[in-house]
Length: 93
Image (tube, rainbow, N blue to C red; front, side):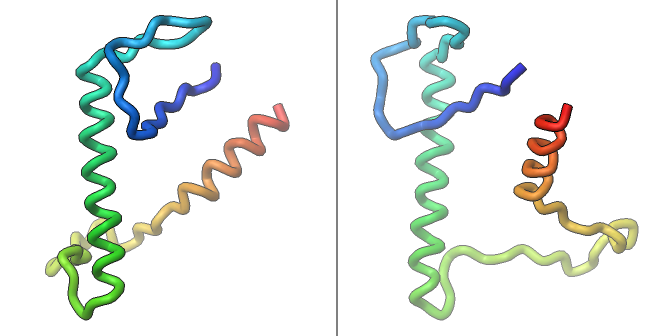
């Protein structure tokens, strides 16, 4: 079944949405959580933009001082590539 995606556009609604054909009801608590994450991400993006123009900004990259030896062979996963492959596999079947 298709996965539903919540996209927040910054507009506030008056309460839970009325259910339509196959839609979910979003409670005020859910909408508050989405709003909190959206606003926090906007702060991160603003800090990144501000950092570009200065030598040192408030955003710093975390680097382990003593890396875990069991993670030595870890290779990062390109999530975009993984999603493309999964989409292509789904179309084949």
